[in-house]
Image 1 (cartoon, rainbow, N blue to C red):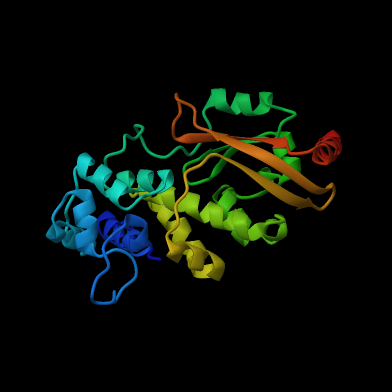
Image 2 (spheres, helix red, strand yellow):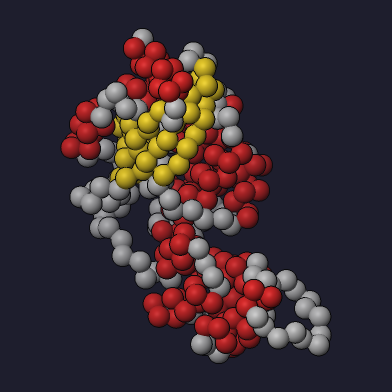
Length: 277
């Protein structure tokens, strides 16, 4: 990882190479070659044929020669490489063909959303920006996770807390999955906001201090979903499993609203006891 902002040309080149190399030629019904493949995945000429572009064009893209594909070409490449929905979004972000909201990253909760977070009680809820800084939360979320008000503002970041905070590090039952998904979400945010130096600095800091994060970041996985499940070992209430939704308000697209619900009766009872204190 590097401390500078995103070089989208280099990242595009690396992303296209890794996705090409992950493909199995047999899945495409390609004819057998007399010479054995020296590298995994499809050859550049095979991707070029599938995408309807020249082999030289693919070579120049993968060598980061400064090309900026059109939206139609990006769509063709996504189809040729059989990208997932999240990977397709990431590719469009890298090539600057995805519409963005105006203004810089949100650093404070908008007043209506802050009131909504409070009104969502007794459901645990919090508001974040694209880099997962925690901007607002209700009492139920503070009791479920942590009283974020006790932390200095620069440390109110859900990814930093998951990886670096001594208590939260061991909080999740399936910690490896939670961290892997979190890193994939963070990478998607990084590509969508290459101008955000604070986000780049956060990634560089965690990379330098956490080998697990550095390893997962190097794998290049991306994820942009807003729904999931987490099981937590709460020090006072025991194990609590929750389903969560992350919503993006149309009026404030730079902010994300997370709402948690108990996943089963036992978790609901534990959450009720916790929030009644």
